[in-house]
Amino acid sequence: AQSVAQPEDQVNVAEGNPLTVKCTYSVSGNPYLFWYVQYPNRGLQFLLKYITGDNLVKGSYGFEAEFNKSQTSFHLKKPSALVSDSALYFCAVRASPLSGSARQLTFGSGTQLTVLP
Amino acid sequence: DTEVTQTPKHLVMGMTNKKSLKCEQHMGHRAMYWYKQKAKKPPELMFVYSYEKLSINESVPSRFSPECPNSSLLNLHLHALQPEDSALYLCASSQGRGLAGARETQYFGPGTRLLVL
Image (cartoon, rainbow over all chains, first blue to last red; front, side, top):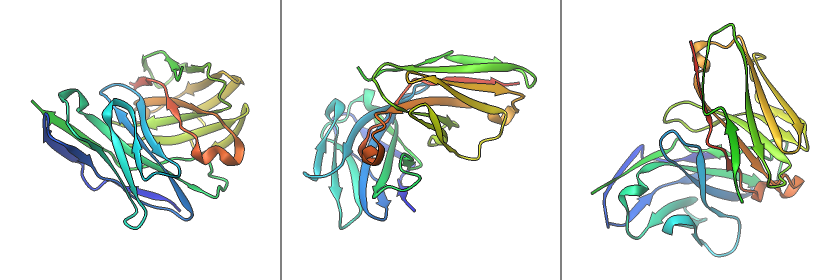
């Protein structure tokens, strides 16, 4: 079985400050990790993913995430937050090798990020 | 181009109505998905189509009936829905490369906001 935990329902940060949205995972096998963002009344937008290789992954809109195998974490980060970054963020995982549920993404519960002006 | 389109954007229906949701992608993806999302919650997988064949049905009630007429289109037929079915319905697609599929990014459409009265 695979699972994802986003321990914070809400994260508040001041504009211009660095932001971190936390994600930890549990899988059997190698994890493939994804971050999505959802703005109000919109679908999910892909931000970045970790498949293999460099533990620091850079994605869209200045976001990056660091894969830490020993801590089973994949925290999302941005050096300087913008008010427009305010949205709902989802971490997701799939594991390899694949089984019958190969294409199922397991999502975390989501973290609402609010960037205060 | 990573666009998935969905129509309609909003839908209000009575419990005796029959309606359909439509999803389209032109990225050459061979895996397509329907998700249901309640407010502030992660998406819940409903159905997965792989090469136009239904590969996963997550024990969804029969009042939801998916259809994949061709590799670019995905429909969700709705009949005799209940008020608790009110939600955002998201379509997604990915390349669908068999066992390599765990690495694939799913691209989501903007969703259809459904209200059942």
